[in-house]
Amino acid sequence: MMYRSVLLLLVSSSVLLPTAAWAQDGPRQLNTLPTPPPAAPDTTRRAAPQTAPRQLASPPVVPDSVRQQQQRQTALPPANTTRYSVGLKTGQVYKAYDVLIKQPLLGRSFLLLDGQQRFDLDQVRYYEDETGFYVRTTLPGRSRRETTLRRDRVGRLSLYSITSTQYAGNGFGNPYGYGRYGGFGGFGNPYGYGGPMYRTTKTEYFSKDNGPIEDLSLRNLLLATSDNQTSTNLLLQARQYQTFTTLSYVAAGGLLVAGLVSTLNPSGNSSASISPFFYGSLPFLIVPLVLGGKSQNNIRQAISVYNRGL
Image 1 (spheres, rainbow, N blue to C red):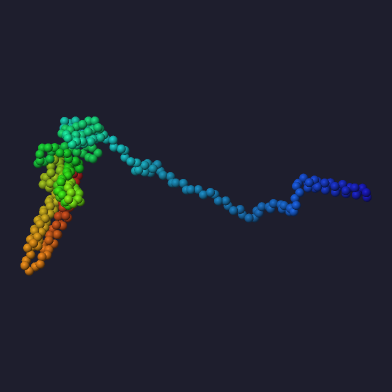
Image 2: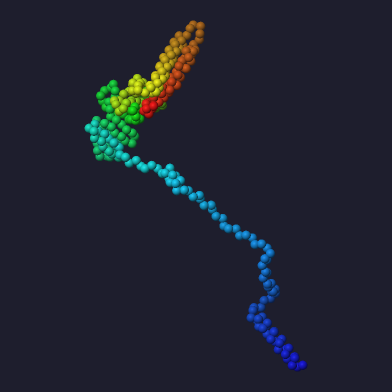
């Protein structure tokens, strides 16, 4: 009996001593609840899928042939480094990157090439600069003095022109200058009452197959284009327009004179008023404005047809 009691005492001591030692090792905590064990994962619930990060769409791949074609379309043409030509009457031709015409107040006009070489205009047969191509020649039916003409069109019928400024008097005047065959040749200052006014006039010439310079008139053009029936027909129609224009001016002038006489010398029974002849002249004044444009268009078309050989 005593032996059994001693055995029970030893067993209980062996159980209580580790528990007491564990309690003394940790800090003493008051009012703490026991920590529940971690919950087991729920294998019955389906995990939400993870979304991948959004990616931008890659640009389409352009073929090499298309890319090269786009580069050719967007690329600028190479810079023109061609030098200008200056031809002398002796047959010599000079090349220069910069051609300037100098017109001093005292002395003769001359050409300056690249700021170094100088040639009087009397020595020059033709020259070109950044504004165009120019020739030195004498005008038909005038003095033998040479004039500089600008070449406006190249072909079997090459067109040339010269622009001059003329004094148009004082006050308000007509601001338009007329060309050789009825077209507007230039514009002047339409304003400035009481002050000097100037009118810019463009006179045109032509040459056939680089021949002599001739006036750009219907008569000369008909002779030059006699070997092309299409151009001849266009020029004949343009001459009809000019004839109708002249008759319209004559009719309008006659009606204006009659209206002026009727207004200044009214009959005894009628009161002073504007004569109806003035109103009758208005349609004849409108006709030249319409036919003048058609005549000029026919002449331009005839020259273009002749140069194309149609």
